Image (cartoon, rainbow, N blue to C red; front, side, top):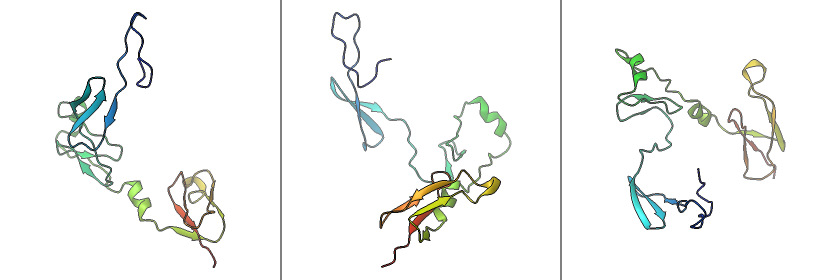
Length: 149
């Protein structure tokens, strides 16, 4: 399939490609595409705003942290007939956000997620700047250097 940033093929080369399209954001429930013929409206897909915590779908079904939700006619919904879908409402990203920033004295800090079998590979985080808060890429814990003035 042609890529949006590729050039149009000239007539006579055997085929033609569509012009690149640029989506315009921030336009209510209807989206617009900018193409050769000008701005054209198209119905936008339902979008989820990034709010952490339990969400519900338009059908009333709880949405998991991965965004799993089934359409009304989906055969996979049969596993929830006669019972409620159980969703853990304590998403990990919410729990990490509640952790306070740890202030340390050194410029470089290592994080292993608590060590042992419950941890993760050790990573080293640079905390050189005055306002920089270093975040562990594995567990999301945040660290900040305590400056002595």
